[in-house]
Amino acid sequence: MTKINVEKCAKILSEKDDILILMHAHPDGDTLGSGFALCRALSALGKRVRAVCADEIPEKYGYLYEDISMPEFEEKYIVSVDVATENLLGAFEKKYGGKIDLCIDHHGSNTGYAEYLLLNADAAAAAEIMLKVIKALGVRIDKHIAACLYTGLTTDTGCFRYASTTSNTYRAAAELIDCGADNGIINRVMFETKTRTYAALERLAIESMEFFGNEKICLITITQDMYKKTGTTEEDTEAIPPLTRQIEGVEIGITIREKEDGTCKCSIRTYESVDASKLASYFGGGGHKQASACKFDCGVEEAKKMLIEKSLEMI
Amino acid sequence: MTKINVEKCAKILSEKDDILILMHAHPDGDTLGSGFALCRALSALGKRVRAVCADEIPEKYGYLYEDISMPEFEEKYIVSVDVATENLLGAFEKKYGGKIDLCIDHHGSNTGYAEYLLLNADAAAAAEIMLKVIKALGVRIDKHIAACLYTGLTTDTGCFRYASTTSNTYRAAAELIDCGADNGIINRVMFETKTRTYAALERLAIESMEFFGNEKICLITITQDMYKKTGTTEEDTEAIPPLTRQIEGVEIGITIREKEDGTCKCSIRTYESVDASKLASYFGGGGHKQASACKFDCGVEEAKKMLIEKSLEMI
Image (tube, rainbow over all chains, first blue to last red):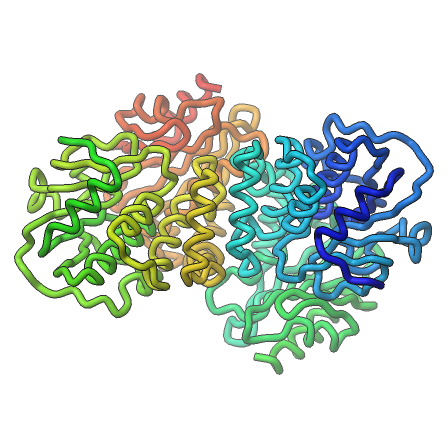
C-alpha cells in the first residue's frame, strides 16, 4: 500500500480507463455522493466508468445518478470510495476483495487494503477530499457534481452539526452552492422529511424509552412487533440511536433492535465522559468512542439486563 | 429613515459613545449573538456600551455575554439589532420607541423605524451582516466575538439547513471557526440537547398528532394539562411546530397551544404548495409564506374545527 496525495491521485486517474468505482454496502450520502461525483467527472473526461454498490440505493438518493450513463465494460481499474475496510463492500467483497487499485477515504481506521490510498482523516466527509480530486483532474464542477458532493458533506456531518465539521467543510459547501448545489432542497430531502412509516416507528421508539442509573442511561427497544405494526424494517432505524443521546443528562444511549430470529443487536451512543467502543467491546463489538455497536445471541430482555449492568459500571 | 451600507454604519458607530444596544424580546440566538458581538467589538474600541433585552435570556445563551463588563451610563446613541419592528422590543417599546438611532437587520419586513437602517434581506442571519460591520470597525474577531456570531448564524438557519442559507453564510461560518468559534459545542448546546422536561412534552405532542385531508394536514395539540404533567411552559414549545411539517405528504402542519385562560393560539407551517400567512390571516393572524401564527378567543376544540375546515379548502 502506498499513500498518495490529491495531485498524484488525479494523475493516476487521468491515465486510466474502464474504471469501476465501488461504494460501500448499506450506502449513505457520502459514499454515493462521492462515488457518483467521481463517476460524472471521469465521464466528462471521456472515460468509460461505472459506480456500483452491493446493496440497493435508497430512493431519496435518486438525483445523485440521474442522467448518468454507465456503460458496460470489463473493468481495468478499481477505485473504492469512502470504504474503510473491504468487508464494508458487502456482497462485493468476495468479487473485488484484494483487487482494489485505489482507495479514496476519510476514515482514520482505513486498513490500507488498496494499492494506492488517498486518506485524509481530518476531512469530515469523503466528499471533501473528492472535491479536491475532481478539481485536480481539471473537471469543471457542474451543478450535478456539486449536488453529489454537497450531499456527501451534509449527510456525513449531520447537516454541518457534528464536531467533525471544520472550516474547510464549510468552505467546500460554499463553493458547491456557488457551483449550483441546491442546499435548501437537498437538506430538506435528507433531514426534514420523515416517511409516514418511519414517523410511526419513531413514535413507538420514543414511547419505549427507559431510564436507568439516575437517568444517565437511556434505552430504546425496537421489537419485530414494532416493525410489523408500522410497516418498517431494520433499514428504517438509522435515525433512532441518536435520539437516545439527545436528552439532557444522558451519558449512555442504548438502542436494542430485535432480529427476526429472536436474537438482537445494539447501538451505543455516548458523550466524551464514556467510551462507547469499550462498552461494545465487552460484548464482542466495537466502533468509535462516541458511537459503537455489538450483537447478542440472546433475546432482548437478557441483552438489556447485561447492557444495563455493564453501563452502570461505566457512569 | 436613511438606508446605509456597512461602511457608513461602521463610520457612524466609530464616532459615537455611550451606546445602548437593543435586542428583541423573546430573544433568540441571532439577536443575542449579534447584539453581544457588537457590544464586545465596541467595548474593544474603548467605548461605553451595553446590550439589553426586555425579557430574560435563556440560560443556554450564557456564554454569549460571559466576561462582558457592561457599565451603567446614560445612553447617548441607541442601536437595535435583528429587530424588524419596534413592537418586537416588548416591554422596552414604550421606553425606546421612536428613539432608535440605528438599526442593523436582515428582515425584509423591517418597518424603517430607526433614523439609519443597515438592512440586507439576503443575509440568512443578522450575524452575517454584523460580521461585516465589526470587520469594517477594524476590530479583531476574537474567539468570543466569533462564538457570538457563529451562534447567530447557526440558530437562524437551523444549523445551516434552511433554504435561506447561502454560500456567504457558509463562508462566514468558516471564517468564524478559524477565529475560534467552537462549532461542535455550540451546535450540541443549541440543537442536540433536549431538557428532560422538553423531551417529555415532545413525547406528548407527538402522541397528540392527528391527520386530516388525506393525511395532508397534521395537527398537534398542546394543552395546559400537558404543561402541568411535564413541568413545562409555553416557552418550551418553540421546537414543536416544525415537527408537524416533517412527515412525508404533509402540506399543512398546525400546532394549537391552549392558553391559561382557556383560549388558544396556533402556529402554522407549510411547504411551497400552501401559503401559511393566508391561512393565518383568515383568522386575523399573519407571518411568512411557510410559517405563520394566529390567535383564537375560543377553546382548543372549536379552534381546531375552524382551522381544519379552512385548511381543507387550501389543499
